[in-house]
Image (spheres, rainbow, N blue to C red):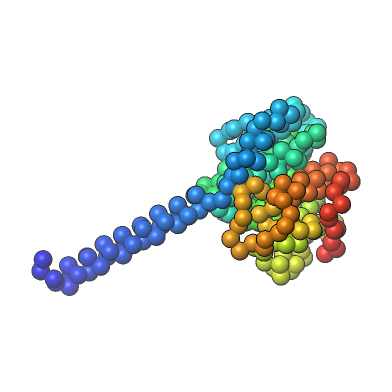
Length: 262
Protein backbone atom coordinates (compact mmCIF):
# COMPACT_ATOMS: atom_id res chain seq x y z
CA UNK A 1 0.00 0.00 0.00
CA UNK A 2 1.12 3.50 -0.77
CA UNK A 3 1.09 5.15 2.66
CA UNK A 4 -0.30 8.51 1.66
CA UNK A 5 -1.89 10.86 4.17
CA UNK A 6 -5.31 9.78 2.95
CA UNK A 7 -4.53 6.09 3.40
CA UNK A 8 -3.12 6.61 6.89
CA UNK A 9 -6.22 8.61 7.87
CA UNK A 10 -8.52 5.89 6.54
CA UNK A 11 -6.65 3.16 8.40
CA UNK A 12 -6.62 5.18 11.62
CA UNK A 13 -10.35 5.83 11.30
CA UNK A 14 -11.01 2.15 10.72
CA UNK A 15 -8.99 1.21 13.80
CA UNK A 16 -10.89 3.83 15.84
CA UNK A 17 -14.26 2.48 14.69
CA UNK A 18 -13.15 -1.06 15.43
CA UNK A 19 -12.06 -0.16 18.96
CA UNK A 20 -15.27 1.79 19.52
CA UNK A 21 -17.36 -1.20 18.47
CA UNK A 22 -15.29 -3.49 20.70
CA UNK A 23 -15.78 -1.21 23.70
CA UNK A 24 -19.51 -0.86 22.96
CA UNK A 25 -20.01 -4.62 22.65
CA UNK A 26 -18.05 -5.14 25.85
CA UNK A 27 -20.10 -2.57 27.73
CA UNK A 28 -23.39 -4.05 26.52
CA UNK A 29 -22.25 -7.53 27.52
CA UNK A 30 -21.12 -6.25 30.94
CA UNK A 31 -24.55 -4.84 31.77
CA UNK A 32 -26.57 -7.53 29.99
CA UNK A 33 -24.96 -10.41 31.89
CA UNK A 34 -25.36 -8.64 35.22
CA UNK A 35 -26.19 -10.12 38.61
CA UNK A 36 -28.51 -13.02 39.40
CA UNK A 37 -30.94 -14.40 39.84
CA UNK A 38 -30.14 -16.81 42.66
CA UNK A 39 -31.60 -19.98 41.15
CA UNK A 40 -32.32 -21.66 44.50
CA UNK A 41 -34.27 -18.65 45.81
CA UNK A 42 -36.15 -18.37 42.53
CA UNK A 43 -36.97 -22.09 42.47
CA UNK A 44 -38.39 -21.87 45.99
CA UNK A 45 -40.89 -19.27 44.80
CA UNK A 46 -41.71 -21.24 41.65
CA UNK A 47 -42.48 -24.30 43.81
CA UNK A 48 -44.71 -22.32 46.17
CA UNK A 49 -48.32 -23.00 45.13
CA UNK A 50 -49.55 -19.92 47.01
CA UNK A 51 -47.59 -17.59 44.71
CA UNK A 52 -48.60 -17.01 41.08
CA UNK A 53 -45.96 -15.93 38.54
CA UNK A 54 -47.00 -14.70 35.11
CA UNK A 55 -44.62 -13.68 32.35
CA UNK A 56 -45.49 -10.83 30.03
CA UNK A 57 -43.56 -8.93 27.38
CA UNK A 58 -41.81 -6.52 29.73
CA UNK A 59 -41.42 -8.51 32.92
CA UNK A 60 -43.04 -10.73 35.55
CA UNK A 61 -46.30 -10.41 37.46
CA UNK A 62 -46.14 -11.70 41.05
CA UNK A 63 -49.38 -12.17 42.99
CA UNK A 64 -51.01 -14.44 45.55
CA UNK A 65 -54.65 -14.09 44.53
CA UNK A 66 -57.07 -12.60 42.04
CA UNK A 67 -56.38 -9.00 41.05
CA UNK A 68 -59.41 -6.76 41.67
CA UNK A 69 -60.05 -3.04 42.02
CA UNK A 70 -59.11 -3.40 45.71
CA UNK A 71 -55.66 -4.78 44.89
CA UNK A 72 -52.67 -2.50 45.41
CA UNK A 73 -50.44 -2.51 42.33
CA UNK A 74 -46.67 -2.07 42.50
CA UNK A 75 -44.41 -1.50 39.52
CA UNK A 76 -40.83 -2.49 40.34
CA UNK A 77 -37.70 -1.20 38.58
CA UNK A 78 -34.51 -3.30 39.09
CA UNK A 79 -31.12 -1.94 40.07
CA UNK A 80 -28.36 -1.45 37.52
CA UNK A 81 -26.89 -4.71 36.19
CA UNK A 82 -29.38 -6.79 38.19
CA UNK A 83 -31.56 -9.27 36.33
CA UNK A 84 -35.22 -8.50 37.01
CA UNK A 85 -35.90 -12.10 38.10
CA UNK A 86 -33.62 -11.46 41.08
CA UNK A 87 -36.45 -9.53 42.73
CA UNK A 88 -39.05 -12.30 42.44
CA UNK A 89 -38.32 -13.72 45.93
CA UNK A 90 -38.68 -10.28 47.55
CA UNK A 91 -41.85 -9.58 45.57
CA UNK A 92 -43.28 -12.97 46.53
CA UNK A 93 -42.80 -12.17 50.21
CA UNK A 94 -44.47 -8.78 49.71
CA UNK A 95 -47.60 -10.22 48.11
CA UNK A 96 -47.91 -13.30 50.36
CA UNK A 97 -51.25 -13.14 52.18
CA UNK A 98 -51.70 -9.54 51.04
CA UNK A 99 -53.95 -8.08 48.35
CA UNK A 100 -50.96 -6.75 46.43
CA UNK A 101 -49.64 -7.45 42.94
CA UNK A 102 -46.01 -6.65 42.07
CA UNK A 103 -44.95 -6.32 38.45
CA UNK A 104 -41.17 -6.51 38.06
CA UNK A 105 -40.01 -4.78 34.90
CA UNK A 106 -37.39 -6.28 32.59
CA UNK A 107 -35.11 -3.42 31.50
CA UNK A 108 -32.93 -3.23 28.37
CA UNK A 109 -29.49 -4.67 29.25
CA UNK A 110 -30.54 -4.41 32.91
CA UNK A 111 -30.53 -0.60 32.95
CA UNK A 112 -33.70 1.21 34.00
CA UNK A 113 -32.24 4.46 32.71
CA UNK A 114 -32.77 3.13 29.16
CA UNK A 115 -36.54 2.67 29.60
CA UNK A 116 -37.73 4.92 32.45
CA UNK A 117 -41.30 5.02 31.11
CA UNK A 118 -41.78 1.26 30.87
CA UNK A 119 -44.26 1.53 33.75
CA UNK A 120 -46.79 2.64 31.11
CA UNK A 121 -46.75 -0.92 29.71
CA UNK A 122 -47.29 -2.40 33.18
CA UNK A 123 -50.36 -0.32 33.99
CA UNK A 124 -52.01 -1.53 30.79
CA UNK A 125 -51.53 -5.20 31.81
CA UNK A 126 -53.52 -4.82 35.04
CA UNK A 127 -56.66 -2.84 34.13
CA UNK A 128 -58.46 -3.82 37.34
CA UNK A 129 -55.92 -2.07 39.57
CA UNK A 130 -56.99 1.40 40.65
CA UNK A 131 -54.18 2.23 43.08
CA UNK A 132 -50.64 2.14 41.70
CA UNK A 133 -47.30 2.56 43.45
CA UNK A 134 -43.94 2.56 41.72
CA UNK A 135 -40.85 1.16 43.40
CA UNK A 136 -37.24 0.46 42.59
CA UNK A 137 -33.90 -0.69 43.90
CA UNK A 138 -30.80 1.50 43.63
CA UNK A 139 -30.71 3.11 40.14
CA UNK A 140 -34.15 1.61 39.55
CA UNK A 141 -35.40 3.61 42.52
CA UNK A 142 -34.08 6.85 41.07
CA UNK A 143 -35.80 6.09 37.76
CA UNK A 144 -39.00 5.16 39.59
CA UNK A 145 -38.92 8.50 41.39
CA UNK A 146 -38.58 10.33 38.07
CA UNK A 147 -41.56 8.45 36.69
CA UNK A 148 -43.64 9.21 39.78
CA UNK A 149 -42.75 12.90 39.56
CA UNK A 150 -43.96 13.04 35.95
CA UNK A 151 -47.08 10.93 36.50
CA UNK A 152 -48.63 12.03 39.79
CA UNK A 153 -52.12 11.64 38.33
CA UNK A 154 -51.56 7.90 37.76
CA UNK A 155 -49.25 7.06 40.67
CA UNK A 156 -50.29 7.16 44.34
CA UNK A 157 -46.92 6.51 45.89
CA UNK A 158 -43.25 5.63 45.66
CA UNK A 159 -41.13 2.99 47.39
CA UNK A 160 -37.36 3.44 47.40
CA UNK A 161 -35.19 0.42 48.14
CA UNK A 162 -31.58 1.46 48.85
CA UNK A 163 -32.16 4.46 46.61
CA UNK A 164 -32.77 8.20 46.55
CA UNK A 165 -34.54 10.69 44.30
CA UNK A 166 -33.08 13.01 41.70
CA UNK A 167 -36.49 14.61 41.04
CA UNK A 168 -38.14 17.01 43.47
CA UNK A 169 -41.41 15.50 44.70
CA UNK A 170 -41.47 17.38 48.00
CA UNK A 171 -44.55 19.36 47.03
CA UNK A 172 -46.52 16.38 45.70
CA UNK A 173 -49.24 14.30 47.34
CA UNK A 174 -47.28 11.10 46.77
CA UNK A 175 -46.98 8.67 49.66
CA UNK A 176 -43.32 7.68 49.99
CA UNK A 177 -41.47 4.90 51.80
CA UNK A 178 -37.66 4.73 51.79
CA UNK A 179 -36.08 1.49 53.01
CA UNK A 180 -32.34 1.50 53.65
CA UNK A 181 -29.77 -0.96 55.00
CA UNK A 182 -27.32 -0.04 57.75
CA UNK A 183 -24.59 -2.12 56.06
CA UNK A 184 -25.12 -0.83 52.52
CA UNK A 185 -21.68 -0.30 50.98
CA UNK A 186 -22.90 0.75 47.54
CA UNK A 187 -25.29 3.66 48.07
CA UNK A 188 -23.78 7.13 48.45
CA UNK A 189 -24.94 7.75 52.03
CA UNK A 190 -24.18 11.48 51.92
CA UNK A 191 -26.16 11.93 48.70
CA UNK A 192 -29.04 9.90 50.12
CA UNK A 193 -29.17 12.09 53.19
CA UNK A 194 -29.04 15.31 51.15
CA UNK A 195 -31.73 14.13 48.72
CA UNK A 196 -34.24 13.57 51.52
CA UNK A 197 -35.09 17.25 51.04
CA UNK A 198 -36.63 16.24 47.69
CA UNK A 199 -39.15 13.95 49.40
CA UNK A 200 -42.51 14.89 50.96
CA UNK A 201 -42.36 15.80 54.65
CA UNK A 202 -44.51 12.76 55.55
CA UNK A 203 -42.08 10.29 53.97
CA UNK A 204 -41.40 7.22 56.12
CA UNK A 205 -37.72 6.32 56.21
CA UNK A 206 -36.75 2.92 57.63
CA UNK A 207 -33.27 1.52 58.22
CA UNK A 208 -32.91 -2.25 58.43
CA UNK A 209 -30.21 -3.39 60.81
CA UNK A 210 -27.51 -5.49 59.15
CA UNK A 211 -28.97 -5.26 55.62
CA UNK A 212 -26.62 -4.48 52.76
CA UNK A 213 -27.25 -3.33 49.18
CA UNK A 214 -27.62 -6.83 47.73
CA UNK A 215 -30.01 -7.80 50.52
CA UNK A 216 -32.94 -6.24 48.67
CA UNK A 217 -32.82 -8.91 45.96
CA UNK A 218 -31.65 -12.47 45.37
CA UNK A 219 -28.55 -12.16 43.23
CA UNK A 220 -25.55 -12.86 45.43
CA UNK A 221 -22.76 -10.55 46.58
CA UNK A 222 -22.34 -7.22 44.80
CA UNK A 223 -19.04 -5.53 44.06
CA UNK A 224 -18.30 -2.74 46.54
CA UNK A 225 -20.95 -3.86 49.01
CA UNK A 226 -20.38 -4.43 52.72
CA UNK A 227 -20.28 -8.11 53.76
CA UNK A 228 -22.86 -8.94 56.42
CA UNK A 229 -23.37 -12.04 58.60
CA UNK A 230 -27.12 -11.89 57.96
CA UNK A 231 -28.59 -14.48 55.60
CA UNK A 232 -29.87 -13.05 52.28
CA UNK A 233 -33.30 -14.62 52.85
CA UNK A 234 -33.55 -12.89 56.24
CA UNK A 235 -32.71 -9.51 54.73
CA UNK A 236 -35.27 -9.97 51.96
CA UNK A 237 -37.88 -10.99 54.55
CA UNK A 238 -37.33 -7.73 56.44
CA UNK A 239 -37.50 -5.67 53.24
CA UNK A 240 -40.74 -7.39 52.28
CA UNK A 241 -42.30 -7.06 55.73
CA UNK A 242 -41.68 -3.32 55.90
CA UNK A 243 -42.73 -2.74 52.30
CA UNK A 244 -45.79 -4.99 52.26
CA UNK A 245 -47.29 -3.79 55.49
CA UNK A 246 -46.71 -0.14 54.55
CA UNK A 247 -48.45 -0.67 51.22
CA UNK A 248 -51.61 -1.96 52.86
CA UNK A 249 -51.48 0.50 55.74
CA UNK A 250 -50.83 -1.79 58.69
CA UNK A 251 -48.08 -1.84 61.30
CA UNK A 252 -44.85 -3.53 60.22
CA UNK A 253 -44.16 -6.97 61.65
CA UNK A 254 -40.38 -6.94 61.90
CA UNK A 255 -38.36 -5.82 64.93
CA UNK A 256 -35.21 -5.40 62.86
CA UNK A 257 -35.88 -1.83 61.82
CA UNK A 258 -35.42 1.76 62.89
CA UNK A 259 -37.71 4.54 61.71
CA UNK A 260 -35.52 7.51 60.84
CA UNK A 261 -36.56 11.15 60.82
CA UNK A 262 -35.43 13.14 57.83
